[in-house]
Length: 139
Image (cartoon, helix red, strand yellow):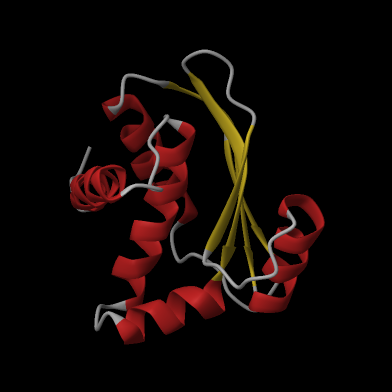
């Protein structure tokens, strides 16, 4: 089950379509869906989470808490809409494209992908692009 929660004045326009897309992203990695919760928030909210649970005093676009068991994808994904907006401007991409990248990025982390080395980051970017394309595929 995929849940969407909002801690600011923002909502996805079509939650069932997003849930379908994310399910397809998970299945495309040979995994199954457990309980996945997206929490959309602002910078201050996510900074507090980052400091409290990860001891990181930095702004970020996403923090992912992994509750996966075996091949079942489960977790809490906190996304700062403010960071997504800033990143979209910085990289000169549409806000929704950047949001899709961040949403898929969290799922890819839960599926086992890393992004700390240049090689891992390049693979992560390739996978993000692949998953963003799935958003526009009718099922």
